[in-house]
Amino acid sequence: MSLPGSTVDTPPTRVTPGSSARAHLFTSGSVERYRRVLADGIERVATRVAGADRPFTGVTPDELAPRIAGIDLDEPLGGTEAALDELQDVYLRDAVYFHHPRYLAHLNCPVVIPALLGEAVLSAVNSSLDTWDQSAGATLIERRLVDWTAERIGLGPDADGIFTSGGTQSNLQAMLLAREEACARAAGAPGARPTRPQLLSRLRILTSAAGHFSVQKAAKLLGLGADAVVTVPTDADRRMDVAELSRELDRCRRDGLLVMAVVATAGTTDFGTVDPLPPIAERCAAAGVWLHVDAAYGCGLLVSPTRRHLLDGIERADSVTVDYHKSFFQPVSSSALLVRDRRVLRHATWHADYLNPARAVTQRIPNQVDKSIQTTRRFDALKLWLTLRVMGPDAVGALFDEVLDRAADVWRLLTEDPRFEVVTRSPLSTVVFRYLPAGPGRLLADEANLYAREALAASGAALVAGTRVDGAHHLKLTLLNPETTLDDVAHVLDLIAGHASRYVRTRTAAELSCPVA
Ligand SMILES: Cc1ncc(COP(=O)(O)O)c(C=O)c1O
Image (cartoon, rainbow, N blue to C red; front, side, top):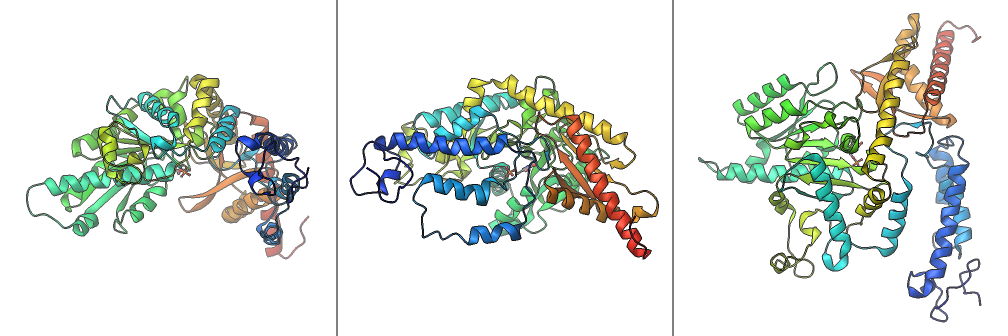
């Protein structure tokens, strides 16, 4: 018997007669459909990834938008096969494939298969990590991974943390905790009691010029003033300048401002640099200031067999952001916030009778919502769990090490190539550089680099990122795929040089009003 509205799929073994919608619910009666439908989806993705000869088709928003807008969402296709055919047209064909070795743009990693298995399991079981009564073992698995990560960082026996949706949320929650701790300290200090608005306007966060913009966003969301984030200059290696940090701390004290946190970055987004954590931790301890380390990118060093020492000093942080979805080869989302003193997580706690009544605390019922700024929350920890149980941490660290080795080779390649200028050497896996036209064409360097990046993306042959360094447009390679070879990068550099030099020739010829050769 074929179900109405289900022309392609064979029916599940047990469904309510006449109810086509019910057949799509994942229940004990539909496991056969579940097996078949997911296998079909996996097959489509596998075929697309296997056949990808470049990371992108170069599709433009103008080309894609009408295809998506033209779909009548009130008219279902009725079966998985047809929906997957349509999906091929509106998504799978033109998606950006981080799996491809010439995807070299942002902090997106290829993902490990045990984590994909975790993703399939977690969405099917669909635990919600807010309360024990919606998650059971999942809560304990997440807690175990939080403890494991905190141990790797060295945060000590009172550490705790929570999985989050990403580095942005981890940084936001860290700043929330730091703000509340600063306000509590100020309220307990002798002298006149400032009002909360007065206090908030005096709070400052110090972070380096290369810090992530989520710190600014967090300050805004937390109701701090527009000038709450103070940018500390970086040294020649684009790391936070510790002397400048000391100066800023002194200046804030003199001006009656309260530094609620210093945010050090272990793996800056643009330069992959690690701020000098030990002296920064010294300054924070001396000033009694919360130290947050944003290790969204650099956290992979926690499992690196050869480079763990680059994170020395992180163990002195009050809070740490880690993004497993950057350097642990995990699918988005997979991130956590760790804290040295579990008691500070109370600033994210609110008890509701219908969900996490206060009595649950005395009954020792582990409700993760007490530590999170989310309520319903995915069991993202399962992906990391299966990764560690199948591969182990050393294998993950070895993958990260491979890309760091490759990035060092790429840096050498670029420094020896007169067509390019390199900004700084990263201990991680980014390389920021620009094409430098020779002679008078040098004046067109900015435009040539912008053009080269766009032309490369339009061709789909490779994807690289762009950024501004000291006011000038640069290109950025972020390597996170161990499959990327030096030959891949050399080829991409030739393509960039080709696009950029063609641009300069065309512009120069146009300005001289003579045809391009
Ligand atoms: C240093 C750093 N911190 C935080 C973030 C934000 O992480 P997410 O994109 O997971 O929110 C990023 C993202 O690139 C980052 O590089």
